Image (tube, rainbow, N blue to C red; front, side, top):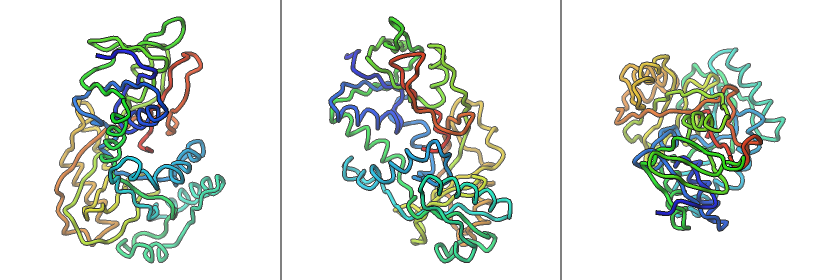
Length: 339
């Protein structure tokens, strides 16, 4: 088994797999390690699939804008798989005056960075999406946002990276990053030692524990999110939806089903059982919240649910950086549900 490469990547989610693909494309040798038994079994394949620029911090917005302009439009063609990317806009909904203040501030931040985001009235919202309830009094509207299928995207990067020579090893739990001569060079697992010129840490919340082995603390927490999927419905809309308080998000998929997530206040019920599982009380609360936005979905049946962890940084902004104190180590984690 190969134990050395130019780059060792910890984590086979969408970030790790994308890094493996682009590095392999440039001719670098890559090994990707994941403690799970399957590829992308963490938050990358357990989310609502938003592809957005709006609602972001100014520090991350340029990267999001670059991806929308240069990566997503041709990604299905590049990966040879349908990532189900729809660029039909994002409505971030408000029901109260306080909500509209939040949305106005987010829109201004985006506009300052050159992104087209407008504040629109409730009537204008329903011109774009007539299925929304009268409770919605306004929204921020970003016409260049959209959504995609997180599973096919994650696995698409994996497949293309493998075709280009990247090695993926699952069931390989990393326990330590080790420095040699002051530089991050080795990745220690329970069974093996891997060595590379660079190490990319893209292991979600596990990144905090692993970064600590070389003296780096990433101030992040683990948050459980739950998503539900309806049976297929008639085509209704393809915008991505969110809210001022980020308590609800979702879209209608290519196949007609609705993919919705939200906050219920009961997420901590499942937090300490070791695996991201859904709870009936949480799903019920999410459904009641959805009904306030979409009364037309009251008869839709829920066919499946799932839960996943997100790694949330203290300042709610992803960590993507070389580490000055540890040459050779690159962090790509704490994505805070922002993708």
